Image 1 (cartoon, rainbow, N blue to C red):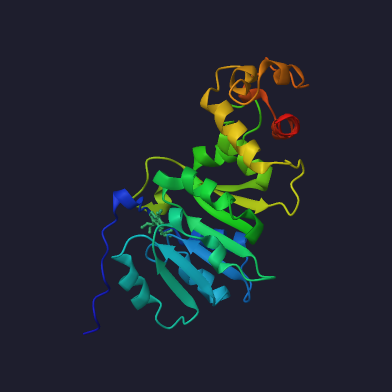
Image 2: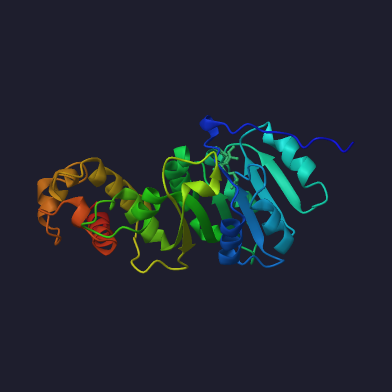
Length: 266
Ligand code: SAM
């Protein structure tokens, strides 16, 4: 008798909702359009639903999976794919720069665990210079936050920082029925493509990042209120932005302008 395939119960604490809909899997892989020599990284391969069709198009792939029990299952399933390297570890702590090769920037893919998606996106943005593009399955609401514009309900810190670094494109929605177990929420696929040169350039990116974080920590207050944590009254008086605006009304361009003016004063 052939050996019984290993069973793996889905674990809620690891955000495990495994993709089972072949049409959706094909649609995701078609959107990524992997080419044989590319530098693919998959976050959270799970039981390999997307890993296999990716490997069939591009034999070299690094995968980062947190759940130790999935490692032997993946190794067993993909033993004939010598280009697959499985790294057991936490994607939140992974140095994605280690996978970068000159002239071969990273293409990062993942049906991400929804419980860590926001901190993971911020972590990944810190490697933006080494990334060619990213394709993620996320909770629909997180995709809406990534693409939101000023004044929209979902506009916030994630929207500003993602759009500062990347062109954000929502590709398509995915219903709960595409997964086992089915999540309670709708999902969507988003593509993030880091800019070689951002359309609005911050002279001090770390100041921009602190400014955006501080402003959205007090999103109901005016910008002036948050600026008091960075500048004195005289310096605030020299800024040309309308300080009565709330952060949710400031565009990415205006945040960058503001941070550049602040940088010149500090
Ligand atoms: N890619 C598979 C699929 O589409 O069927 C699994 C997707 S499931 C939503 C998320 C995967 O991420 C799980 O395999 C889970 O164990 C893994 N995971 C959860 N937290 C992680 C972390 N911090 N770092 C790396 N992988 C993680």
